[in-house]
Length: 76
Image 1 (spheres, rainbow, N blue to C red):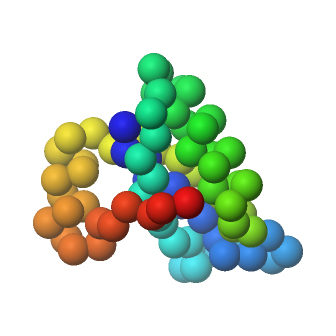
Image 2: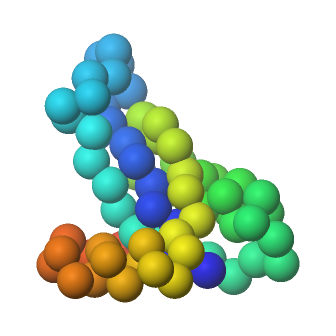
């Protein structure tokens, strides 16, 4: 499963929509909820990012992300 993680680069500032970034993480999980938890924990443990939201990408959404050229899996 591939998850899109929306985040702010710093935890010490209030989040601003204009500064939200995203990364893509591949996670092995048996359910969507378990995958969201694993993805959030992985990013929290390996970065100092302030995570806003974790979203499972559907096949169509994943294809769209690949077509736009912004898709790149992040190795953590």
